[in-house]
Length: 102
Image (cartoon, rainbow, N blue to C red; front, side, top):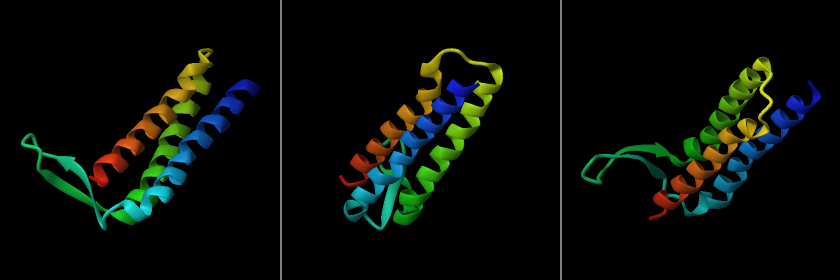
């Protein structure tokens, strides 16, 4: 299915854009990036900056490939389904950067 392969490649490229966003923001992120907050609003978990900058995009691409392979295996005809994971990944990265630089 040629169109599925095209959408898998395009959605994976969009997920890889998270690396570009995080590399651009790397200089603004602290050494320890807050990643989890308690109900009172206090930070309860930190990740090292490089783990965020390089690990999050790798995880996004891996998740996208798994989801896309599953969609292609089912013969999913709704093209938008291939782009949900990249959209969530890009939104999550923007939130990580915004909250990490506050």
